[in-house]
Image (cartoon, rainbow, N blue to C red; front, side, top):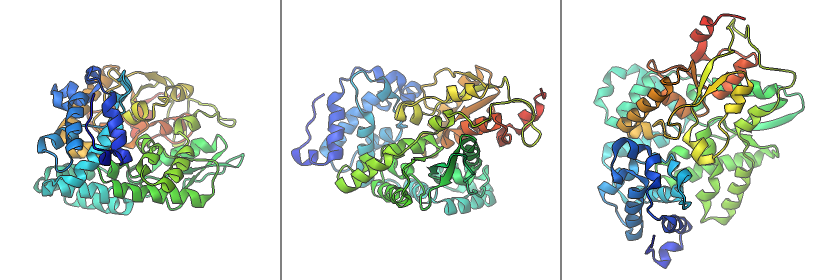
Amino acid sequence: MRTNFSLAQLADPHVAEADAALRACVHCGICTASCPTYVLLGDERDSPRGRIVMMQKMLEEGGAPFAETVTHIDRCLSCLACRTVCPSGVDYQRLVDQSRAHIEKHYRRPFADRLTRWTIANVLTRPSLSRAALLIAQLFAPLAFLLPPGLRTMARRGARLRATTAQDQTLVAHNGRRVLLLPGCVQQVVAPEIDQALARVLARRGIALETLPGAGCCGALSFHLGREDEAKVLAKRNIEAFERSGSSEGVTISAIGCAAHLADYEHLFLDDPAWRARARAFASSLTSTTDLLSSPACGVSPRSGETEGGAGTHDALRVALHVPCSQQHGLRTGDDGDVLRGARFEVIAIPESHLCCGSAGSYSLLEPEIAGALRARKLTNIRSVQPDVIATSNIGCLQHLGGADAPPIVHVAELVDWAEGGPVPRALSALAQAQPSR
């Protein structure tokens, strides 16, 4: 399609990337069937093709966008399923990222919306504040109805969670190899057992998992809210922490949504050559947890029978593998199925696996109705294959899909750890006790 950006606009490398994405689009509409919001709502404005038209007009004209444009761009999950199926290679990610940054700079949102977004960017990204917020949510849960919609959703969800203190993940490794762990933000507060399980699994493979001193939130939450400057601050902190470590053996993170953002750090600094080179070096050091888990264990094989804590067998458990959008459409990496099959689980595919579950970082807090509808659709598809457990590799999906109305859901690393003799995952305690020992 034709574009009409000025030379001054195209001097911005981020706008130039958006322009390239626009020019590649031929409006064929193949993307619509892969778009969760279009499949759900049937509105062309909530399809990639419809949003592309609105984003082009907004970016070319500059200035404050129309409220209608903001509404439909806000409804995009950034799942990137459209990018996966696009026959023209449209890099929708660059276009929607630039559009969100433009909205953040030029559009004045209602106060309640601004407050919700500020809370997400400034509280959820800081573990100490997240722990305090969870305590407040539990104490004042009966008054949540008094809050604005976004904060109400956040408070009610927080009231169901319990903060847990993270522990040092380092375990002795046989061959001295080490990988540095980025602890992230939300996961270390609500589910630190995931990284503890990963540390045990890697120790059996001769790899020491060491927490990277000085590292923190990856910045994805801020970035996808259009808050580029805040995302850059968080990215610089992680890059500097890695550089100080002097490690040549790589870094990893067990939340795949964070991994996708870390791998894309270079694009944060397109207008800053020095930091762009440092971001590229950092991203090149990333090692996926799937690759690490695929490494053979040292003298350990998956087993059935008794595990720590007196649990029963894990053999023959049917595992519905939910592959996060950030993994299949963002990073476009392996889906962990071979890892789980290697641990002797029966892995079953989920119908409509390409459609987002509705988590999408902070999306489920900002767009709870659409996120809830997508969750219900995903759980219906999951129940249709009658699994014993759901496995995923992203904390957002795990928290969003979990609940009394869903099968138990755990992180892939926890299942592998259990299969190799580790403790029963918390979500599977009742199921494990019900399994007959073999």
